[in-house]
Amino acid sequence: MKYVCELCLWEYDPEIGVPEEGIEPGTAFEDLPEDFVCPLCGAGKEAFSPAE
Image (cartoon, rainbow, N blue to C red; front, side):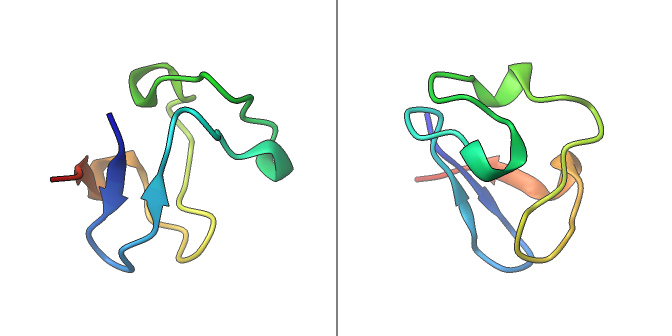
């Protein structure tokens, strides 16, 4: 399932991950580190919601 940042609309796709941030492809949103922040706006995980 993809998750979207409610502040800037950046989308986290677990199939892609965020390799430039050290997040490997296949990493579920729930498995992201607690200090993960949106690479675009810096918002924390609490700003993300499941994409529809």
